[in-house]
Length: 553
Image 1 (cartoon, rainbow, N blue to C red):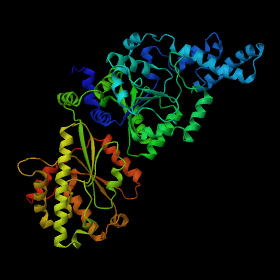
Image 2 (image 1 turned 90 degrees about the vertical axis):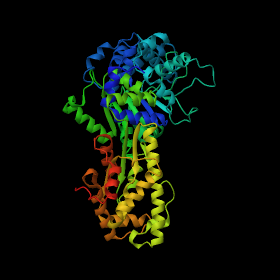
Image 3 (image 1 turned 135 degrees about the vertical axis):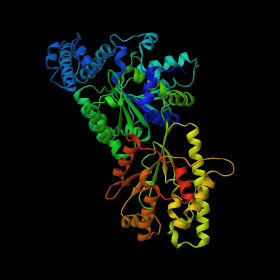
């Protein structure tokens, strides 16, 4: 693989985003949301230019209305142009004796036709020439083919044409479908499970005899209806898609009220689930070059819409697509050359009842490892101090086996694919915190033996330790609601010992009086925006096994 300077710059600048998006694509849980910004290089107009073309069209002749262009919102101006066109057509239709119903239908069809003419003016009709002009789609076609659904807010059929052209180049023969499915009504069932191209604003293919949607969302009226429809659940498919996939939003404006509404809904429903928004810039800035406005914008997008903002120029957008479509070996090799990490591990820990499992359940867009890989013994629900010697041994043996299996699974993921963001419910070194002080060295030795049995020479997988703490009385209530039988004083001591064990190297989060949504957002901030150091858990266990004191907080 030949890498450009832009490719290398992107992997240095946004390694965590690349790791997350690449892994989601591997697991068929990624998607693209595409806007008009990516089409300008192909000759398509932006919304403002399209409105001007329509106003100047021979069948509209409303250039004088463009004097209001700078101070009239484009949807309202488009609505005015439609009414202006309608009055002209109604006069002609009355002369021909048509009834009002037919006139309205013909007006709608005629306006769509002149929109089509204005939309495709200057855009290559030949697919080869279209492909030559393309600087975006060719890098993302593998992602589009593999994704369950790609959302295209544009009216045109560029995605469809380039998918067919790419299929032809790859030498694929006839099959039962074109390899993709175009839909304009997300409420209907889809025929395919991959490569569904959804046009929520309507569809105007270049070839007018191709099937097209009945509604084009372009005027103030249709945009208002779309927003009302989104509130009434008509766009549940899009909302469901955003809740199940990790999406990359490219070429879009966040001024779209319907899009913002759906993104906000998704953020409220899934506080730990984040998407990526590409903000186009003429020149991609280094992290240190982001100005206060860009930093504020990125923070607002993160907090309100659950969007992680990537500032990319045209070359950077192309590089992002190239990197996401790369093989694991090629991408890891590039990251190694650039000194970038592509695998991130986060342990969420704390005493029973603190909300670890509930918090982790909000991060299913990450690679998730459960607290335990098998059903827990009933004895796990009782305080450690109350267990008999026999029950303690049963629990100890079971826990050691689970720690060894869990660590091996983490090591396997680190080796292959070695790309992604991993979140783990409970830390593999936690069992020592449940053990009396004088027995901890032996417990640490036992855990190390389970982690590295025989001559395997495995090590405890390191990662950022996210330590959740809360008031002991609240923890007892939560634990009892979960079927456990904790003691408040024992819970207080256990939390204190857990904090002492991990010391200052853990990221401590006090969840007192926080809702689960707030906890999820606090964890998401550390995972996606902070650069907190990984904890060397192997060194921790060896230090405890040697009887060395814990690090001070």
